[in-house]
Amino acid sequence: MNLDDLILQFQKKDKTAFEKLYNMYAENICGVINTIIKDVERSQELCHDVFIKIWDKSDNYDASKGRFFTWILNIARNTAIDELRSKTHKNQKKNLPVHSFVGIYENSEDLNDKIDTIGLQSLLKGLKNKCILLIDLLYFKGYTQKEVSKELKTPIGTIKTRLRSCISELRKNTRL
Amino acid sequence: MDIEKYIASGILELYIAGALSPEENLEVQHYAIQYPEIQKEIEAIEAAMLQLTKTVSPGLPADGFKRLKPELDDVLPFLPTASEKKTPWSSYLGWAASLLLAVGLLWVYLENNNLKSEIEITNQEKQSLEEILSDVRDEVADKETLLQALRDKNVTVIDLGGQTISPRSYAKAYWNKEEENVIIDAQGLPEPPHGYAYQVWSLKLDPLTPISIGLLEDFVTDNNKLFTLPNPNETEAFGITLEPEGGSNTPNLEQLYTLGAVGP
Image 1 (spheres, rainbow over the protein chains, first blue to last red):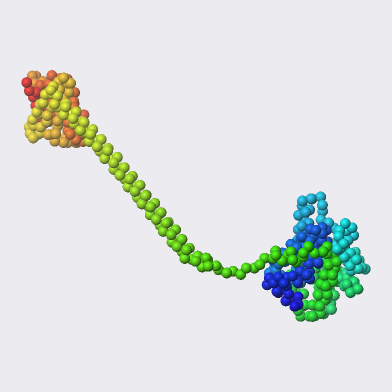
Image 2: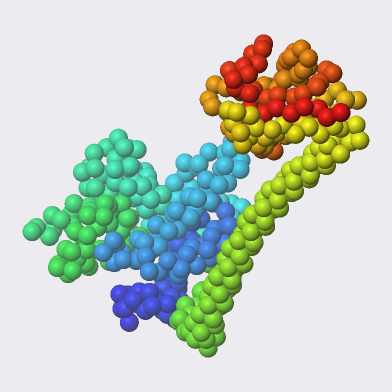
């Protein structure tokens, strides 16, 4: 069964299809959440909640609006950011963290061993900080192209070509 | 369309990130269907991002999908139940019953209002009858008083006969010497013309000396035509003349209507 059919079955509330999608994307979703909230246990709880949301809102997914992965990525990011905001609200001295997803292993001695720091390092090998920042803002923090352009004070055209070369670099590393 | 250039623009990377506008998303999807190279490129970018995001995973929640599965809502198809089929009949019955009750209540309310206004009317009638009764009682009492006055042993009754000007007129005087008053019964006198009134005189006959004892005031409106006048005089005869309104000092004997002498 190809991805499109799987998604169709899932939208018909087929639990088997949903289980397949879970197995395909759960690690990615949990990973994205953890890079934002930096709390393994809470990330796993939220990851669970995100999949419940995905199931409940299955009717909302529309292929014309983008990839399925993009859709669930967006739900995960929003859930994690909401969590962060409500936490920040409770303890207002803490600001939203500015670390990129790379920070997840830079100061993670007390975290568990499950994070594939070696895999991450090999994927990011040769990527400039500019690239890591760009990938972080667009994929892990959910910025729109306009927001990134404003944040980095760089024209959208430049952002796009830079992103293209950064992802090409990343893709070279994936083939290693 | 230059596919290479389109791919190189970086728009597909933004597409995977979800950073495009809805219009741009539609455009990318449209080209992806049209050009397999674009679809392939999209999938490659997504694969790279999947690999990247997977490396930062802290691991799946305990029991993963096993724990998730029981929490997924089952979509229950809508099936009307047997009790729901019965609903219209019992609901119509209910509506009918409540309509009947409403009509009944309205009728009771209106009936109650009718009875209230009937009671009101009856009360008013009762009150006016009581007033009439009270008037009648007063009248009876007045008449009894009058009768008693006329029957008093000290009363002398004098017949006043009609005179030249009005031979058919007559009157009676009930004179109580003790109480020094006289009741004139003027029923036999015609109505005085406008601007005139009857004046009653106490007469001494030798020589003829008239003393006015009063006017028969409001003659026309007085129902029983009985007038009580003071009379302290040693009267030998009573006469009634027609005088201009307000009375005269001396009687106009040409207008003497009735006259009667006090008997011995």
